[in-house]
Image 1 (cartoon, rainbow, N blue to C red):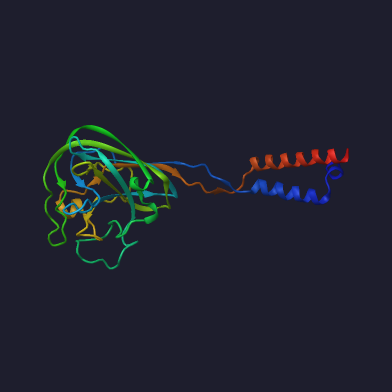
Image 2: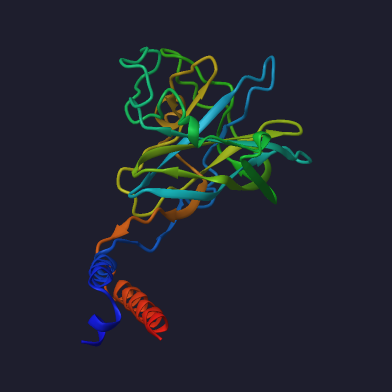
Length: 288
């Protein structure tokens, strides 16, 4: 046979193995786009979410949840809030949390009504992104004046004083903050909480509520805490105001992390044939 004359037995055996391996060799699956959104602000409530700014301005965190059905690389996000007229956003930090009791002390302290379905005590350290550290970039889109029916700013207390009813309505300038994660945030399939904080040139950032995600079974509500309550969290609607539950207005985008597909099929066969032809051509050159 022509193949036997041109290519020695040892080479033919290697080619056969290569051909078989190429046909069944796993190839990466195509990545699927990921998009999650709780919708535009609905005017029901606004909650404080800021870093520690010194005496009298302790860190206060608001978090809302989302679900990943597969390993996902998050690249961008948005969240929408109120800021005082004339203020600007100077720093943004994003943290991600598992659902309690992961990353948490158990049993909990008992300082709050419930920790069921709350964010964990501690953030996922590897997923934190901060504009101050250069792991996040952000831009702002300013809107018009926007009013909300209620707020939670300072009234965050341990039980039995957890119910305050909120701190009343307010009006401010709507701002959407868009963030780019550099590097992306890679998370396995699981249920998570998203916690953004914004520091302003003056005043406080209040995260606006949204109507909630569509077709999202298992959706949880917005939780809040400050340094006096930490590591515990309270439900904004169920514990603090008795008006909820609430969702917060945010979105996340990225893509699934592709896994292997068993059987490359035709692409692998074409690759193997190409190698075979190259070896035969080389053999002819040597014989000549």
